[in-house]
Length: 232
Length: 341
View 1 (spheres, rainbow over the protein chains, first blue to last red):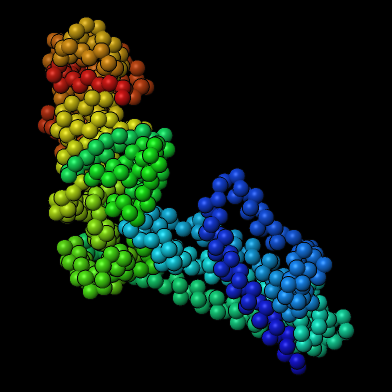
View 2: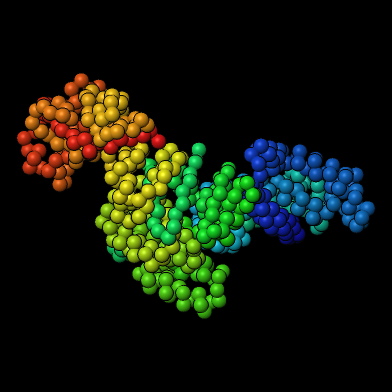
C-alpha cells in the first residue's frame, strides 16, 4: 500500500496547525485591545471560514492564489512558484479553515483568565512579556491545548477546500481524505477501507494523547487541598 | 463614577466605605492598572499620572504594592517561584536567594517554598502575597480589604501580624475596608468614601467622635438617625422621630440629619427635655448586651429612619418586653449634627 497519503496528510496538518497555533494566539491576544466598534466586525470576519462551506473557501482561494489571481500571478512572476496544485497548496486551505477554531477557543481561554493575576504581575514590576508567557499562557493551557487539538483534527480531515486547491495527484498532492474519495469513485472499496482504518487509528491516538495531557495539566491544581489548612 | 481626592504621609490611611463605593477602583488607578479620565497621582514627589500633562507611568515602574482581595498568587508557580519571579527581575540570583530566605523567615512561611498556592491556607496565602509585594520593594503599600475574607478566629492573629509588618515597613499604607472596628484599631487617619466620592481626611478619633456627614456616621456605626428641620439656635424638629430635641448650639445651617449612637440613648422616667415616648418593637439578645428596637409615638412604622435602636447591659434590659411603652432620653451633647455629604 502506497503510504504517501498518510505522510502527506500528517505533513500538511502539522504545518498548518503550527501556523494556526501562533496566528490564533496572537490574534486572540490582540483583539482584546481593539476598539469595541471594530472588534465585533473583525470577529465576524475571522470566524467566517468556520461557517462557510469548504468549497466556498476553496473557490475564494483559487481565485486569489490561482495562477490568474492577484496573489498567485505575482508569486508566479516573481519566484516562478505555482501556488495551486502542489502539496503545499493544501496548507493554505487547512490553515484558513482551522484558524477560527484556534482563535475562538484561545480567545475564550483568555477572556476567562483572571485579570487580577496580570494586574498583580504588573504592580510587582514584572514585564508584560513575562506575564504573557509565564502567567497568562500557563493558566490558559487547557484552552490552548483544546484549540490546538481541534485545529489539528480539522486539518487532518479537510477535504472540500483541499480538493479544489490541490487536486488529486497520487504521490504528489494526495491526502487521506482525497484518496478515499478517489478510491470510492473507482469502486476500490477494499483499499478505501484500509485508509478509513488508518484515519481512525490516527484520530484515536490524537484524542488519547490529548486526554492524557489534560489529566496531567489538571494535577497541580488538585494537589491535596487543605493539607496544611490547620496551620495559620 | 469616581471622584476621589486625598493625601497621605508615612502613616496608615484607611479608605473606609461600603462595598461597591469605588475603593478598589481608586486603588487600581493609583497602581496604574486602570486609567482615570482626569486627575493627578503623585507619590513621593514623583508624578505618576497627570491627565493635563499627559503623564501616565507604567504600573511596572510605579513601585506601588497592591494586595488584592484574592491575593492573586500565580497558581501555576510554587511559593518560591512566585516570590523569586519578582526578585530575579531586580537582582542577581545569589542575592535573590538570600532575600527570599529573609522574607520567608520574617513572614513565617519558611518550609512552604515548594507548595503551590492551592495547597496553602488563607492565612498562608496572604503572607506569601505580602512577601511577594515586599520583594518588589514598593514605596507605598495598598491593601484591599485584607481581612474581609477570613474567619474571625484567624482575623485577629493576622491583624496582629499585619500591624507588625506595616510598622516595619514604615512607609505610606492605604488600607481599604468597610469594617470600622478594624479601621479604628489599625489606622491613624481615615478617608470616608461614599458612592464614588471621598470626604476630607481626618484622624480616626475625630471621625468617631464627630463624623460630619451621614455616610461617615453610618460607616462608623451610628445606628440612629433622623431627618431634621431647624427650629431655633438650639432646637430641631426630628422629622422621623416626631419629636423636638435640644442640640448643642448653634445648630449648623447645613445639617440635614442628626445621629445618635445606640449606647447613648437610655430609658428614663417620664418627662423632661429630650425625652421620647416609644413602643418596644423587638428585644434581641446579643452576646454581651441586649438590643431593643423602639418606635417613637406618631412615627411612621414602615420607615427605616423612624426606628430607634438602643443597647443596654443585660441586667438593665431584664424587665423590657415587646409592646411595652417606655421613655428614652438623649443628652444634647450626644447628638451629632450631620450634613448630607
